[in-house]
Image (cartoon, rainbow, N blue to C red):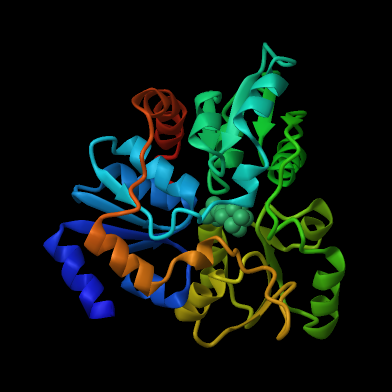
Length: 306
Ligand code: 13P
Ligand code: SF4
């Protein structure tokens, strides 16, 4: 299957982009694997004719918005995101009526429609830098992730108004799960994604995006780590650090609830079929793409060097 995918990919001049949360075999056949920031940067500079996005719906939408004249296909159109779903367009629009003089910053994990209501987009890899670039007195609404928003507020001493959204994977990791591992692996540092709740983040030695966590472990000298995020990161952590050990928070032999069910919908079979049939194709109206592109491009220009 892997060689068939490679063959069709080169015949059709297609690029396969994959997030670190996808299955190992998907990451192995991808042309580029990254976190949300790196994937949007890669999507903005590709010269491929077709972009096949093995990730979730909002990521493929971002690729389409940045490449309105290219075909963007997604292996399973039902690969959504609970965090993006926690912020419906019409509810958010109504919410914003209460904050007319606020700058609207949205985390990239939101729908294209919500992006059209936003002044700026951020990812977990650039959120602190971008929010910090705005004057301290600027009034800000941050959506949809309340945990990431609260984390930014605490690091930068801001009072952004937060939309009450969360990711079903990160929001369910709890302090006790981390403590259990800390008691078992006494000196191992804890690394965590900022979509986790504050009590989990308080126990973390390092907080950052998927790429930032990978960099931290690569440059650090401990031999074991406690990892509070989605399970997919383990594949790349282990690949980059074969001699180190990783203990994932919340997962056990009988419970893999911190697998993102949406990311895991991408597999070799549906990738091959999507490439062959060039479907399901991601379609967005010109109006939505043109409006949503503005805050995404602002983000990309503020992320140079990251
Ligand atoms: P990253 O920004 O680290 O890629 O995280 C994306 C995501 O969906 C986290 O749940
Ligand atoms: Fe969305 Fe959570 Fe999956 Fe990330 S892990 S894609 S935020 S549902």
